[in-house]
Image 1 (cartoon, rainbow, N blue to C red):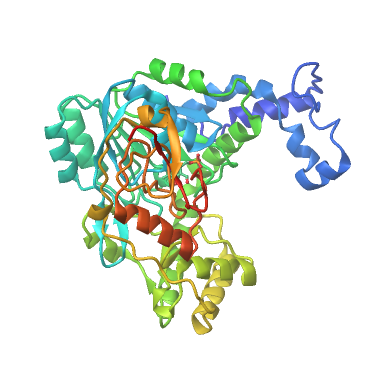
Image 2 (cartoon, rainbow, N blue to C red; image 1 turned 90 degrees about the horizontal axis):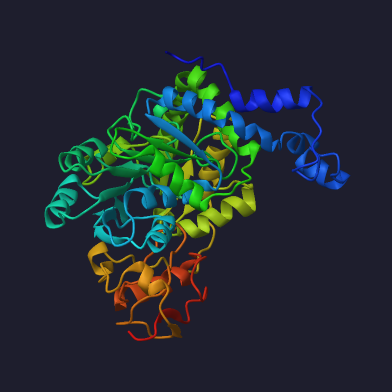
Length: 477
Ligand SMILES: Cc1ncc(COP(=O)(O)O)c(C=O)c1O
């Protein structure tokens, strides 16, 4: 039976508990905000504490059912520690200790952490390298097919789509390959929570045949930070296994605020998503055209679909190459923040990326357009040279040990890691993809690249030595 998408079980429970004048001698200790001091309440709002009603978790399963129906999934599971934990749960479900899993190498660091937790062995799929734009797109279907032929023991495939730059894989094609072998396809769809609420491409992963899709609802969507979603499609993933894996690693005190934000956002998008996203797409198209006409800027558009590895493209990701202004994206991003108080999603060696959403109104888009025009008219001085980004094949590293064995091995810090086995993740941000990860053997290209990226302005938040003077390697390697 079609459920009523007007309903919001979690929000209704929070409201009801308030209206009933419920008091608690359990948690939360702040007693729905009664014990909160005025300064905290002034900044966070007393209502925030008023909605922090742990009892609301009893209505989450009804809210999950509504969500699953709204996006055409078999099952929806709300999680409250970001997509990082959803990815751990998904990977632990499809690939346990010693299992082989094929993974696009363009992974977010949470995928590598999942491999360490699960003790699974990755077979890396090389992403498609776009030499003209100096950026990686998803691995092609034929790369996945060859890897599946070479690894009949694979327990599953994991793709990251869309990338932080908005380019998407051929999920339907890869799902067919997986299903022909009876194994599941998991998709890290962290940036695509809204895809299921609009008929235009990009196609939502579960609609395209993915068996598991993980989404960060706080990224391009309306959830509070850490609100995340696991969607199950098809019948290759056991929903009970998934719940047990989640139970293994999640909190027993999830935030009702996060659950409520997911519930309310689903209602909003289920009722008005088509219209809201149509508006965002229209504004994005006009902005793209306006900035595309500015001298020195190159703005990516639908022509990306002619590029290898790009089966889908997200028009709400606005990628603006600023290298024609003689500056890096790092400098441009800092300038926008310092001078205009505008935060870009990312600034890399040569471009800015803005995540546009249904929440941006005409005034916000005008503010962004004017600021970028001003940046182009008077680019700031840039004395840090852009790092040379080596073609991906130079960064192909031997996976000499399993990520888990390397991570837990005896380690040491060395200034010259070339030839040694890495025992940590080193992920220049942006885009947060580990350039080297536990078990991979350092080569010269990756070592030079990391140090050059750091010198040019990338931050390396996860390295044991953030200055990159030394790296953590396996002692015996
Ligand atoms: C592609 C991708 N996957 C997973 C994550 C992790 O998401 P979260 O920050 O919600 O834990 C991110 C975060 O940036 C991401 O970009």
